[in-house]
Image (cartoon, each protein chain N blue to C red):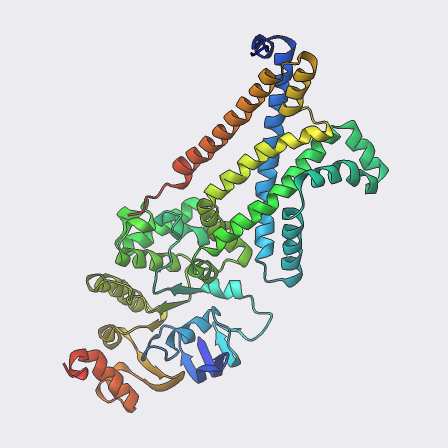
Amino acid sequence: MIIFKGVHKWFKNLHVLNDINLHVTPGEVLVVCGPSGSGKSTLIRTINQLEPISEGSLIVDGMNLSDKKTDLNKLRAEVGFVFQQFNLYPHLSVISNITLAPTKIRNIPKKEAEEQAMALLTRVGLAEKRNAYPSQLSGGQQQRVAIARALAMKPRIMLFDEPTSALDPEMIGEVLSVMKDLALSGMTMIVVTHEMGFAREVAHRVAFMADGVILEEAPPEVFFLQPQHDRAKQFLRQLLTPMQSEGI
Amino acid sequence: MLTYTFDWSIITSGQYFDWLVSGLLTTLKLSAISIVLAFILGLIIAVMRMSHNRPVRWFALAYLEFFRNTPLLVQLFFWYFGSYKILPTAVNDWLVSTNFEFAAAATALTIYTSAFIAEDIRSGVLSIPKEQMEASRSAGFSYLRSMQYIILPQAVRITIPPLVNQFLNVAKNSSLAMTIGVMEMTYQARQVESYTFKGFEAFTAATVVYLALSIIITSLVNLYNEKVLSVHKAT
């Protein structure tokens, strides 16, 4: 469903993606992790072409992204994207945030779109917030609305770029549980996250990145118990026992 | 010793009152038309100015610099005395048969003001976080539709104070239209003065009208801002 073949990307002289080869099959949940600056966000942003690639080939849902004839707007409508900072539209109510793209891009009648939006809001546990504005919601609530907004386009793939990194600890659970339900429903998902509990429980595969390279790619039980690469071992040690590794 | 005797009755009734009222209506019409058209044109020029297409961007830049940096009076004279010389005869005949003075004044005010409005809106757009554009592009909106549904509605909202200034300028600048014979407020006040030598009364009337017009415009925009735009209160 998503195929990276020899993908490179440079920002000026900085080699942010270095020979990425990755194959994500339909229904698969892939977690991408790694230290900051490793290229994980860039990787996930190339999939809906928020970042163009410099070299190689990237095929998403049968569309070749290097082909100039590929309609990027059409591709993006099929790929849901959830941001670290939620990025809800602050001038629109919760329900309008969700119905905007379906009514304007898919031309779904307003009433039908609102019914779908209410179903999604119920699914993420926020039906009573339909008329609220983003600024009136907590971070966790905003992120759940952002997930509902992405799902309203009935995407074939969902991308999550550190969806819980901007949240207070007590709100992380509510967002992860929505994502877990989504994974169980068979959605193809790529998730950039440091939530190793989520990775262990939900992911089919974990990719570990450092310095623009995918160093390891394994099922979570293998990755967590027998990491091969030193960088991965060090990363896991820091993540699981941050205080010990700092020598505190 | 003051020898002037005030006579306010000439501006509150009779023929001169009618002149002033007709001047007021013309000023209202000229200002309203120019404000609406300048706002629409300003939006378009602002979007062109930020376009990824280089010729489009350069055209908008040239437009902005040209119309911001030449006096409104010269532009007014250009549209009135200059433009019809290069238009086809048929268009000219039609223009003369309508109200050419009014059309030239509205054109000059619209184009002049649109350049300022475009720059205000552009600075509003630049203050919207780029993530908003990313979010709407990710949803599948094109650049222009992202502007239409996501970016401009937010940008216009924060641009309201400078926009009010531009709207007030239109109302006040519309007085220049008297120089090409548009019978608006200032023109009629001057006319009343010529007939009656009651310059103090006539221009007091004009002053009050412009002041009232400015206050009304400010109040209307503020009301719209409060009732329609600021529906969500920041927490």
